[in-house]
Length: 347
Image (cartoon, rainbow, N blue to C red; front, side, top):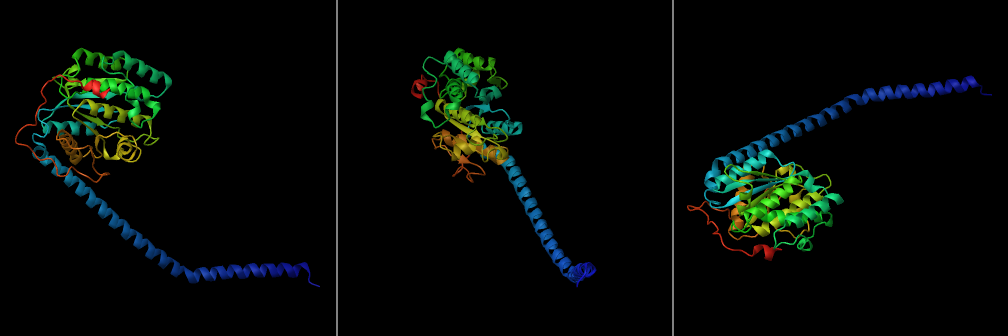
């Protein structure tokens, strides 16, 4: 008969054998494992070194392109926009260096920048109270030949931003015109003051201009935020910006939607414009935080003045104006003040 002591000795012997096997096996394999891990580590280190070199080369390439664009801008842009006035419309969170770079490029092209119209965060609120407030204000200050809301059905935009769309129809003619005289100064002042007093808009005229003078602009650049909205392309902020860009287009000779590269990708207003189904057609530049992109903004406006169709330019679009606008020995033509029925046709 096998007693308990026999079972205990057997179990101990089994575990001892396992332990000895593990020790012997680990000792025998250790060299092979270490050698394999060492080879894998060296391969990874080599790949990392190659990637760092590529990144450095790309950074140098980008820096070189920027320096070239900066040095060449006076020649590339000469007289492209001479005789034109441009207003900048900026969204909350727009990058300051992008705005100043675009302004410099426009001035090098011969344009006069009349100032900035800064949309405030309150403008993008979609609560019922804000929508009602924007609707009531738009109706109150609208010019006689514009009925806010008439054009909302023309575009595939969310009804969530109906108030912003109606406001855009009224704000646009107070910022731009096709001949510089479409809207009386008193009416433009009433519109801009009305939206400013309720915290939806802040107007900053350039030196030598008044707030009313912003409506003399014949072209516009809308600068999107430095970062895309968290909720993506269909975010109400994108919808509101696109609505305003389209209204500015209808009232002027051309509009460019511009943004910095980090803020122009997936989920941005530019992405929604290019890849969405809004039915809105304005030009865009997705790398306007760089010198080449800023030059491209001015060139895109020049293309629109020449009667070209709106297009997407920049890094994501992998496209530049082709053939690129060439410097002109003479200034671009300045529209002569004439009577216009544009508001009625656009409404």
